[in-house]
Length: 540
Image (cartoon, rainbow, N blue to C red; front, side, top):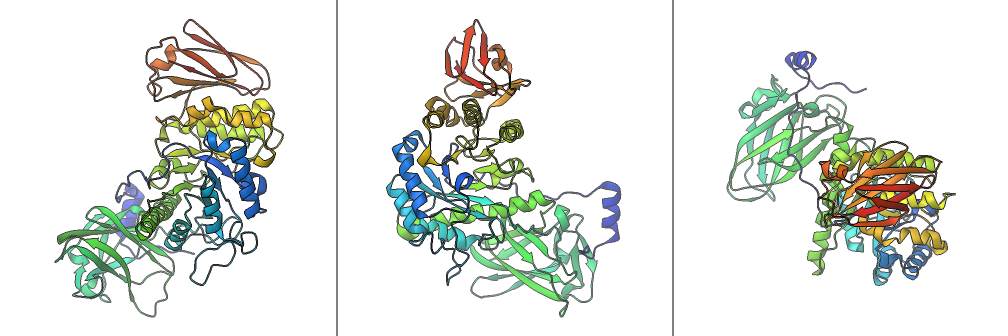
């Protein structure tokens, strides 16, 4: 059972009566990474094949995608989901493909896919193991990112199985040392001269140098800043954090340098053979005076997930740039997919940690479940933007026993919601009706529109009405019949102009039916809808 750090009675009283203050760190900008700017389009092995994939299946699928015109329609990523791995890392700790099913190695497969005109995607998990209990990335982010970059991968889906959250507890800090990387003069900075914020408090202790340590840094409630850290020249320095040992449980600190995130330090559960310990990070300092802040930003499980996903995101970005510098070739950005399942509200932080984020648990080819996923994702329209998208999971079009109208509705809704379009069916056996649905170029154009604004639901009921602003000033409108009966629905186009999010320009009379049945009568769109069906029109 975890215990609280030694802290001051004042801190507990303040929390009890006034609540816990929040002393934040750097506000992270949107993550770019050089990846795809519009929603991802491709195919994934999971929905149909799960753990039965091998090199032949992947290459046969890619060949079928070319032959059927899917590549030409924009489906350029071929993604290996879970089970491409061997349980054995190599002698240098790097991941390997299954030694039998991918006997030629993953780099060989990536090369073959590239030759065919595709980009290759891989899968891992933000945990100690993947969801199928194979080697994953937690704690090995840099090694795995370098491996993926060396292989030439251009997409990574990062799941959340076997995740170990970061601790919200912080250590008791009594000083920091700053030393040039590689050796040189060490300068110690005592907490007696540091600036404290929030619940951070100095506590007397004869067992540590300087006679004081700082407590109260837990869960974003306090911060300690050393404002005048002076070094002779710009470069990398070793920051040593000296702590007073207390508590047999894990702890965590983030480090900001000159107001920007610079490093993180994890502290394992410690036995108290010695009363003090030291932990280190490498940071970059400017010549002259610098400020170094220590705090624990892990206020809850959302914060832990965001930090750990950012860790892999930036490892991928650095690895791609490092591989390009090493080979002299252009950077191959790795689009990063956060697959956290929506439990920790990734739409609130996902744009700072990746290019797309799952908003729901796994999809299934069951119509009630697809509608449930739609209902969850459609509400999150404000969080999507260029290069950053809500992900209601892969497409089940062509799977299970979905009718034609349900398949069309599923696809059209995903297009309207700026969702990634990742096929999950057996392309080698794709039927003509399913192929026609997923290659509908007008719907794909709505999904891939450069404005990258997710549709907003502007009318809710037996028939939902969604409106999606487009880059050319037009508006895509989708009528979705959620019932098993035929329905009729109407919309006054003036409603699109008055809505602050849609903000449609004045209607000029342009009207195009993309799918379904609709007419324009004056300023009113009138749609006739099949059970579980959709009608999509574009007006301008």
